[in-house]
Length: 135
Ligand code: 5GP
Ligand code: ZN
Image (cartoon, rainbow, N blue to C red; front, top):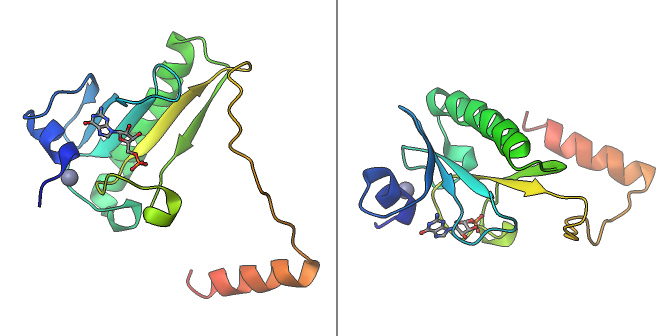
């Protein structure tokens, strides 16, 4: 199956690369929310975050932190978002695990927090109990 991010890892597809480590590749997103919006991926192909092996997980997350700090400092950003879309319902369009790092500026006007729900006290407990059964 073809994967554009595997092609970038292989060098057969062009990208503006920031980090090329043994296990991790980071490059600029072709359609940025803000300039500097970057993607961090494990070089091995995993469809989503849940599938990444322990061996590849730490190098990826470590790289996310390093690159976030570099993006914030170099671009004088006021903050940054780190996010990973997993599954079509979450907006995933490329099925090779990746983290977005999006530099944010006080004046950029993006609103990620929309349609926030409210819990009753019981509902909050019920949801936590449900999740904890799987942990
Ligand atoms: P997703 O929607 O799966 O969370 O994120 C996929 C991201 O990959 C999108 O932000 C999209 O702009 C970016 N993208 C898609 N194709 C390419 C490509 O060929 N090169 C680069 N650099 N980014 C890409
Ligand atoms: Zn891939």
